Image 1 (tube, helix red, strand yellow):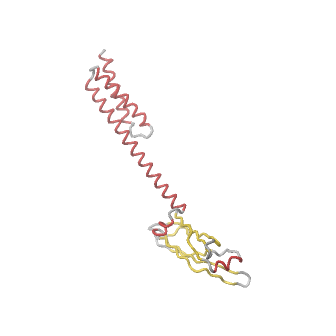
Image 2 (cartoon, one colour):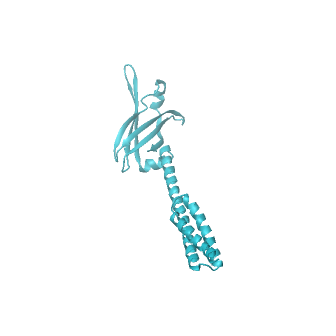
Image 3 (cartoon, one colour):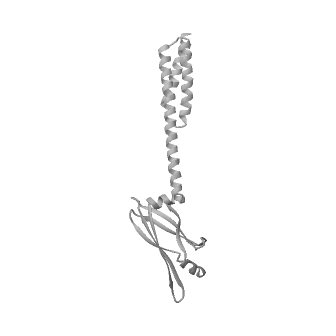
Length: 201
């Protein structure tokens, strides 16, 4: 009878040890938590029956430590996942252009020049010079969308400048609006050019 009674304490201690050893493994530690709960139950039965008291107390302590370890491990995993998700969301907002004002303030300097029209013998060349400067301490690429707006607020034309792999502090000049239809040239002469969207990656 004594062996049957002491078997609960032994089983509880063994379950606690197994649970503690696997309490730091993601997903598996869910089973560890179950083992610990069953182990605590076995230890309580052993204590109620007053058999193997020392082993039952030791088993209960190990099982409780397992539960604590599992909870802490899962909390740490949850925090890590949340941090990864937050970082991913921030990166996606930066790439998608949702943080334009922040990027213009901290990461890139964009200077829009004057819209120039050069009449040629066979064709008319147009260009809006755009100077892009990387203000970061590391290499970055930028996508800058620019719109030409008429006096009434309507959009005449839109163009995008791609500044790829700019080193820290590096500047580069780009030509935009150099492929526009002839019927829009006059309107572009009097247009206001604005930065519509900026993405960084």
